[in-house]
Length: 132
Image (cartoon, rainbow, N blue to C red; front, side, top):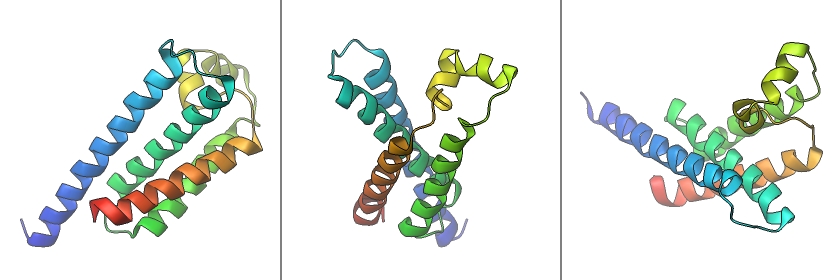
């Protein structure tokens, strides 16, 4: 394995670890009885979901700069949010299950998109500062 390949493998591992941490934090945030005020419960969960999307994207595209990763992750998160505008019986049935609620959500919100972009940009800053 060459040096660049080792760097990419190490970066993939680190990014996967950060994605897993964001996933666990998000699940605790949304599912544990933390008794958070609605503002923190709602937007904190969305923020952590977006951070997870950033790190998954970074693991999949380890050669890209954090800003390009942020762009791809932001487009993906925005696209997933826009899927909430489409309704079919099967999709709606999935949305009412826990996995569907956590992955896709049920109701479209432009505010969610704004929170996603903030989370993704902060993750990109952390990536630029720490991981590289």
